[in-house]
Length: 449
Image (cartoon, rainbow, N blue to C red; front, top):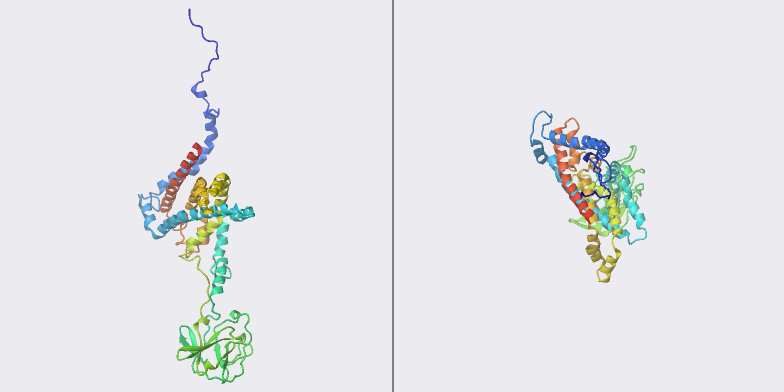
C-alpha cells in the first residue's frame, strides 16, 4: 500500500529569478531604481577620485611621469608645507574649541530663563554663508581702529589704562627756540628765569584737523612774579600769512601737552598746557630749561595686527568658532535633554559638587554626542577654504594657507600645476578617510545597542 501525499498546504517553489529582497522588491526593479544614483555617484565621485590619483603621478604638463615627486613637493615646498602645518592646527584647535564652547553654552543655558533666546543668538551665524562671514570678519579685523571693531575695542581698553600721545610727528623748526634733547624730546636752548616774559614753545608738523577737540586759539599769558609762564602752540596759520615764533590769532594752542622744568638733568617741576596752550611753572623752575618729553610725540596706539603673519590663523579660527559654536551647542543641548535627571540628582544627593557632577556624570553621558560633534567638525575643517581665502590679506595668505586653499592655488591660474594640485587632493582624501571610518564604526556600535 503506497503512502498518500499529505493534504496540507504545499510550498511553492520559486525560481531564483523571481526571488524578492527583504522588503519584497525584485532585485531587478531595485537595481533599476538604483542605477541613476550609481551613475551619478560614479561620474561625480568615483571617476574624479580615480583620475586625481592617476594625475597626481604626472608632471605639470601631464605628459611626463613624475612618480612620487608631487607628493615629495608637498612636504618640501615651504608654502605647501605651511598649509599642511596649518591644517594640523585647524584639526586640533578648531573642533576642540567649538565643542568645548558648545558644551559650556548647552550646560549653562539650561540654568537660565532666557536660555532659548541665547541659543537662538548663538546659532544665528550658522545661517550666514562662509563668504559673508569672511567679509564680516575681514572688517572686524581691520587694522584701522576707526573701521575695525576688534581694534576699536582693543585701543579703547588700552587708552583707558595707558596715556596716549597727542602730537605724533610734531617738531620745532630750526628758527624756533627749541632743540632736540634725544629720545624724541625737545628742550629750550637757554635756561628760563622766573618772573620774566612768557616762554614761547612753538611746534609744527601737526595737521589742524588732528588737533585736540578742545584746542582753542593760543594766547600769550602775562608774566607772574616768581613763576614761569608760557605758551605751547602750533606755529602754523591755515591759508598762510602767519609769522614764525609769534602767536597769531588763528593759531591753536597745544592743549594737554606736558612741559618739564629740568635742572642738572633732574625734573624739578611739571605743567600741562591748557586749551589755549598756556602753562605756569612754580618758583622751583627758576633757571631751568623747559623740556617737552618724548611722551608727547609717540605714535598713537593702533591696536593689534590681527591679520599679520603671527595672528592671522588664530584670528580666522576665531571667526570659525563664531559660526560653528552654535552648531555644537544645539547638538549637545539635544543630547543633554536626553540625559536621565535622576542620575544627576543622585550624584548631588551623594554630596558631589556641581563641577564633579559635570565632569564625572554629565560629560561621560554626553560622550557619544561629543564624538559626533568632534568628528563632524574635523571633517569640516579639513576642507576649510572660504574663510581663509576671504579674511587673510594677500600679504598674509601664505602664512594662513591651508590645504584646500593651496589646492585651489595650485590647480588654477597661469602658474597652475595640476600634478601638485591632484596630489594635494589625494592627501586631503587620505586625511578624511580615517575620520569617516571612525564615524562609521561608532555609528555601527550605536546601532547594535
